[in-house]
Length: 113
Image (cartoon, rainbow, N blue to C red):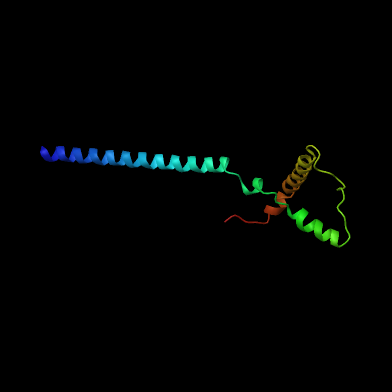
């Protein structure tokens, strides 16, 4: 009888140990997540803190000016509204139509194993 009681006590102790380990692990995960999120949103980023110039401004425009070429407006300015999204929509539609149309030719010569 005493051995059964001691087994039950040892099993309860193991369960309590597992619960406390799980709780400690969960709390540490929460703290790590909280630290990452607060550091991400509260600390300034390098892109926002410094006035970095892009490759276009720092390299391409400099080399173009050295060779006598000045920057000019593009023929089709895609920065206006949703024009760039519309161009991608048209390209995706054309690519999808071509892939669907030629799918049979791409797959008919292959044999199933």
